[in-house]
Length: 219
Length: 264
Ligand SMILES: Nc1ncnc2c1ncn2[C@@H]1O[C@H](COP(=O)(O)OP(=O)(O)O)[C@@H](O)[C@H]1O
Ligand SMILES: [Mg+2]
Image (cartoon, rainbow over all chains, first blue to last red; front, side, top):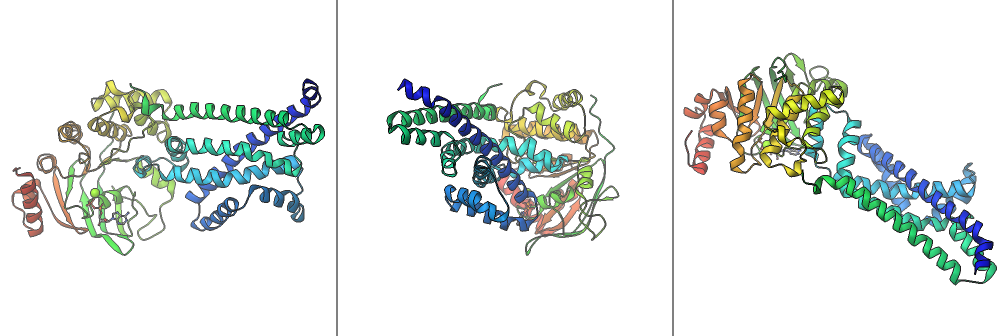
């Protein structure tokens, strides 16, 4: 056991690192793209609604694995030649954006119109209304769903192994096929994800408290 | 008190029409709102009072006619012309304060932040200046001791007074009130009306949609009665309440008196 760990330790560390990296970038960029899409839909031209809807429905209606294959193996056909890791991160970004944009849409819809009108009546510009009022108010209802989806994305990262990204799933699979041991690799994988998800949940709860403190504290 | 009222503005509506789809909410509304006076809008629910008020600061864009603040057209670049550029509209809205039935305070900000936010983001004051002015405005509505409370920890009457402070801190030249006391428990109505009376006494131009006939009778300079999107009668409180000439107005007041079984 110690021997296998010694032998595979560096590879496992690389795997952890790549999983964390692709998750962090995929989530962050997916959130940013989802936000941009929602803002375009809400404040842009009415006609933008149709392509955005089609995009969201397509991404939500197909498996992530298929999207990733299309991107990685189909991309070169249209001149999009990406290495496995960037392709994986881009795939996660696109996949996440469709879900994030829907969560944000529901969140923004739940902001009472009167609070927006009050800002408009005072003469706020739209960008200020979004950043100072809509986002903080929306976070109360949307944050749990956003964190939840970020957690789901941790587990989607294993699919990057299918396009040869040497992340943690890839490393443990290699370990299994070379050593014929299953328990240790699976245990490592499980412990890693358990710690990973637990950390995100804790962080999420801290954020939630930050955005909802005003509902709780007594002044 | 350093919260100064800028010179009060007049508002003029000329043949204003407003449609919601096929439904006409305002029909040929012509109304002059004199500067420094209190104009009360009364009328049955659904008669278009809110719509009229919201056309003055273009929260609703009227479809035809003209709305002017003093001489300046609002909503369109020219009569019947292009929509007003957003920047111009924002500039004009700074002059127009609005107070809503549901207060519409921002729940994630304290009372002080609610008042200071517009001063900082719209008026361009520094943080320190904005806070100083916001504190003055809160003091003016009697809430100096509540500046750190979030709206969820204020009574309805206190929330509405913060909302008034938020509006007057911007030094508007005209103030619009849409049923400011309708969402309040009866015992909290007085504190809000008190602040409004004080503003009226200081010479603010006020347009007040209200069901508080007592307030209209005692504070208004002019009372406007609306029904089905039209202005049916206007006059001094005396003319409107003591000798209503229009039968629809008379029956509206009759109904009100019966529901409230009191005189004014
Ligand atoms: N956004 C809207 N869409 C469709 N109809 C509306 C809208 N706002 C108001 N109305 C209609 O316009 C009429 C006047 O409404 P409103 O101005 O709110 O009346 P009031 O304030 O006098 O009660 C009502 O019949 C109402 O149903
Ligand atoms: Mg109304």
